[in-house]
Structure formats: C-alpha cells, structure tokens
Image 1 (tube, rainbow, N blue to C red):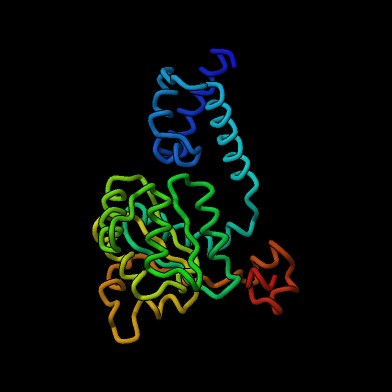
Image 2 (cartoon, rainbow, N blue to C red):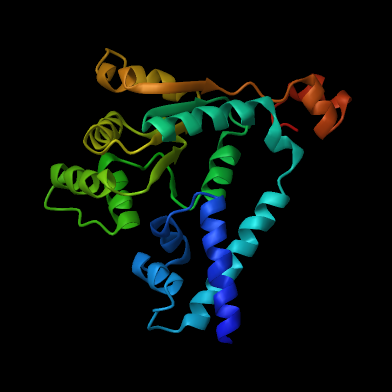
Length: 255
C-alpha cells in the first residue's frame, strides 16, 4: 500500500473517530489490536505491517457506515427512541439503567445495534447457567483481567480495570442472573462507575427488587428505567401492514 493511501486512511480514521466519538482504546478492542498500535499508526510511527492495519481500519469504517445506512424503519420506533435516550443518559451520567419488556419486544435487537455501532460497548448474554462465578470469569476474559484467587479478588480486579476504561457494559437476558451475580454487578458499579445497562423481561424488575428486599441497595442505584411497549398501530402500518396489528399487538417476534 502506497504512502499516499496510508496518509488518506489516517485522515479518514481521525475524521471517523471525531465524528463518531470513538476513542483509540475502543477502536483497538474492535479491531483486535493494541491501543498503542492505533496511536502509532496515526502518528505514522507504526513499526508493524502498516498496510495490514490500514486494511483492517478501512474495512471497519466501511462496515460501520454500511450498518448505519442499512438500519430499517423498525429501529426508529418509539421504543427504540426511548431506549436510546435511557441508554445515552446512563452512559453520560455513568449510571445503571434497565430496559424491560416481554419476549419479542425488541430488547435484544436494541442491545445488539448499540454494540455494533459503539465499539466501546461490551455486550454479554446471560443464560440459566450464568452464575456469579461464570459472569466474573466472562468479564475477566473480555478485559484480559486476572480473576484472582477468589470471587472477591475478581470483583476488585475487574472494577479496578473498568474505573479508568472507556467501556459501557450491557447484559442481555439479565433476568437469568442470580442474586449473587446481581450483587457482584452492583459492587463493580460502586467501585468503578462503569455505565451498566441491563436488558430483560419483567422478571428482571422483580429480581432487582428481591423477594425480601435483599437487593434494595442495587435497585436504589438504578437511574433510567424503560418498559418496551411494542409497535403501535401506526408503526405496524408503516413497517408491515395495518391488518397485522390486531394479531400481534406490536410484538416483533409475533410479526
């Protein structure tokens, strides 16, 4: 790759990072390279194969733009706009937020879209097998953080990393998380202030309250809350057809 083309890609990268508010650390995670590699590439001091890194950067910017242009009308529903607002506020104020709704209402789609378009988002999907230990191990693996000798050390090490990291943590299907895992997330947020957005069904709300008020400390820390309502009649008409609404009541999966 010629020097003039590398120079062009550097200029495109700088413009992209400024326009989309993407940090070098976030971009490096998305590309699977070190943050210093991005910094050195921008300064024309990268000692590795600059052409290969440039191709990665070029492809990432292209795919990012493609995703933006291919968004469908369904992603601009009232639910999407309100969820985006709650998420953005949580990130801005480094808060905990929850997005809830019935299965098929679009929660996972919104979480995945944010993950795709924001390189600093780390999105995990909980399952029935996601214990506190499993959650901490997965978080440690995502950030390259040593788990430590016990769960306490895992929470401390992960929190220490997140305190100064440009990271937004999202967990989908969070209703599957047991009490211990939810408590560990609370402590991680307490120690680090990492923006934390939980997605789940209404079961998540009940779990966050605790049967006997044992999670009162966690629930009191939640800032933004939004319950998905599904497409209304006009949105169904615009995206699908008016006749479908009485059968689906705006549920994406039923649609």
